[in-house]
Amino acid sequence: MKPAPFLAALANALVLAAQSDAMAQPPGQRPPQFHSHDVAADRKITFRVFAPRAETVLLAGGDIPGVGRGAEMKKSEQGVWEVTLGPVPAGAYRYHFNVDGLAVVDPRNPATSESNSNTWSLVSVPGSDLFDAKEVPHGAVASVYYPSATLKRMRRMHVYTPPGYESSSDSYPVFYLLHGASDSDASWSTVGRAGFILDNLIAAGKARPMIVVMPAGHTGEFRFGGGGGFERQMAEFGDDFSNDLKPYIEKHYRVKNDRAHRAIAGLSMGGAQTLAVAFGHLEDYGYVGVYSSGIFGITGGPNGAPPNTQWEEHHKATLDNAELKKDLKLVWFGCGKEDFLVKTSDATVEMLRKHKVDVVYKETDGGHTWLNWRDYLAEFAPLLFNDK
Image (cartoon, rainbow, N blue to C red; front, side, top):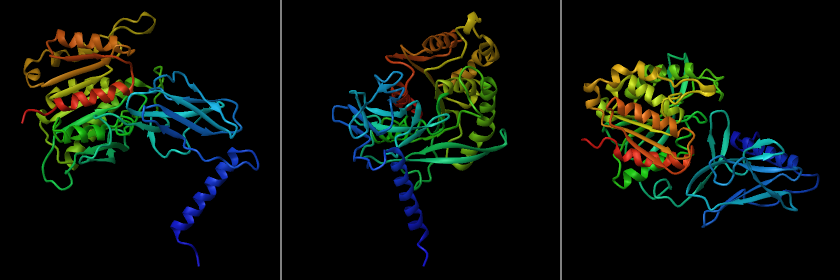
């Protein structure tokens, strides 16, 4: 009699796991028992990985304070490498191990976060009223595929629906939330903790129940340094967003389709995309948020290139249209004082104010990291859809 498919699959998985451990250790040495990551009450994190044959192991994680280009790990007699960092602020942190030059996700941690071109292991540090998983009603985050006629293929987005959406017949405001160049459509709901932030704000009565749509910002392979056709991808994203994604949401979800109940915001690359989409169709958006971003090139380019004035010239009719701006309820910018795009944000805000666009601008401590972007979302979301 053949084993059930589930039992056969389980047996195969156990065999593969045993083979993996065997490959990582010298002959005759069994791997010791250990936790790959521990979060202490004082918010210090200890990371461990079993790599007895490795010469050097570093912990990598761009948003973890104190890591820099990599935190050196020390090897025990059992072959377990270890490092303790912190205390760190409450939040979610991506990390991986660099084992003799090879980037390796944590093999003992099933929690992961997709990036633009790779996957990171993920650790959550509790202690925040904003983005801890609390005992409140929770919404749902779904991975949703839609057909893109613009790009002639299926595309993926993530969609948050608030608590009670499934059992209700109500229509909801919609908030489009865009990611940065290093990220994917899964980033806001994993390392960004967007679902938990909305759950907690709604439960506390600080934000209205809303649908949050997290699109994929890349339309093809992306490389830093301009080699990935950035301008072309920006245009393709805008066309896909307006012609395919937004109509799909309005057809398949109970969203309110008027300007007063539609918001858009994004971080870094997503902030630039937000400005392009919003000011290209300002009649459609009542709320606009830009996190750690602005008009790229507005302060000048490399090698002394002059400031980019094309965006302002292209959108001048919209920027100077008093009737369109009259029902623009909020334009909100946030940027860290140590962020490499802070001058870009400053110059973009100045340009918008020159055209009498009322901008709320908040400069905070910190740099170009999720430590700021989660806070910006938690501050921006309560400002949305307050006019009944």
